[in-house]
Length: 111
Image 1 (cartoon, rainbow, N blue to C red):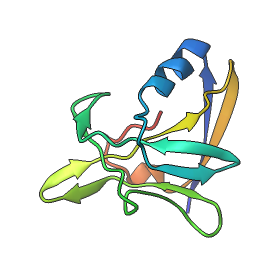
Image 2: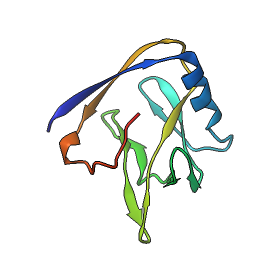
Image 3: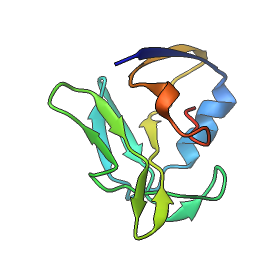
């Protein structure tokens, strides 16, 4: 399995915008010492995406690893998204992916 390190330089306004995408009654997961809201709208941005908050789409395993899955449900593709609560400040943040990103469809975006 290929490991991929993603480095993000995030400005405060982006983090604030991400915070507002969370819905008050969103399901949450605990990951890396933080609480994360799982996006629970059926259709919406970014892009013309469908979103799933199912435990089959977003979960934390027994080793503490966060999983986000793109799934085909009833003939339609659904994405998964989480947002941290509360948002962090300016800074550099790193995420380690343990997946073969080269096998992904070119339309899949991580951000």
